[in-house]
Length: 511
View 1 (cartoon, rainbow, N blue to C red):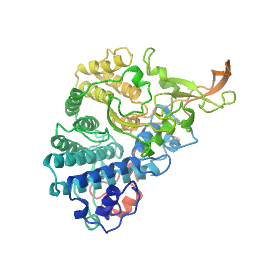
View 2: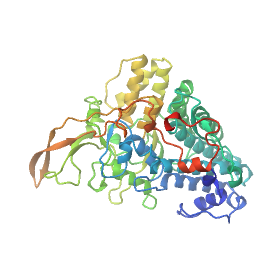
View 3: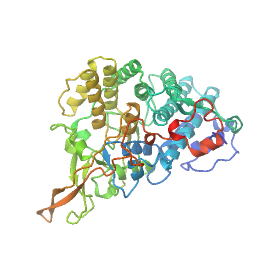
View 4: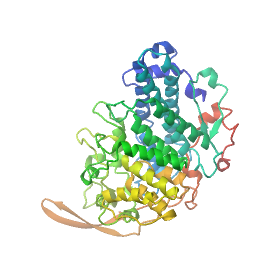
């Protein structure tokens, strides 16, 4: 890990205290005393770490942490991607297994963020400032670190109930220097990484003052921490905690967006249902680039990558207004008289500002918390899980479910796929529930597409495009617990950290 953690304080200082140049190479010219003098300095470190996490580019397909969300959906069952642009290798389930760009970026983003959080946690008690501010900043650093460990736990190992002692990733709880990292750090087990994530978040919940009022939805308050705890405990199969934390989060806000809000483009962090988000401005808008992939209905969007599996549209019943957003259409900027294909489009995501091509990135909203609460209750054999699920379904115009037991759990998991489509949950749900990717080809056929041109109605039969990749890269059928689902410890980390597999052995699937 020494390559990641060397020159720690200098990296923090440059990343947090300069204007926007987050890729500046570090030097050894800045010491801890000049970085951490006041609570304001510590907050600048956190803000710089956030910018690094969300804004760092690996390629045009990989703008910051949002690339992890896009990759997760591309690798799942319900998105059909074109093969011309970014995330096509993820759609083929080959990008992560070969330790491609997203895999390396994931590691880098997570551990750089953890490093910065550790520095804040180590120094915050010594700086000048009020105790409430110190507690809040330490809590935000702990919550952010816990969020990163949650990402690592849920992507670098199989489900915790498959083998809680399976190797995952190293845990760093304290500030790490070049000298202390040179000997290496063993990777922890998946259960240990989940435990670390949950403990960080629970400690954060105790530290962040109840009266703290943030001025932007990227800043972590108690509501965000409760949501992250709900998510972490669900993934770790700690059902009682997932139930209780999600209930507390819903007590803070149980608002579900209206039909008009749902259809407005999922692009505005001021939406009352959104809990956690990355707002975009004209001056800071790199992550908006993700909408060039997500927005498949605006002509200027260009890539039109994240389309819907035509079979999946049938998972939405008539009357469910989410179904209204899904329809066959050629590329929006194509001439329909000569377009090669129609794709099943989803108008869920649209640029908010077409002139400047800007859109905010959603990271958590109340609908997910409803579904976490419903699943936790169902896993505990509590029929109240159906009530929570039906509250969400009713808001979306869908009829109530009447199932219980395992059937109710499956209904909830399917509702996650319907409600959270395109928001980055597909891969982690496959891994944590020990499911398989489900894809089948759409029958060859043509769709009668109708459009208006110069006041005249025209129509043409155009070939329909559904899933083209229905097997793993080695030609085998999709199965649960596949090596192709997991992010992997990077080659650079394996070379630099000689103790990486000294406590828990490398997974057999990679030998």
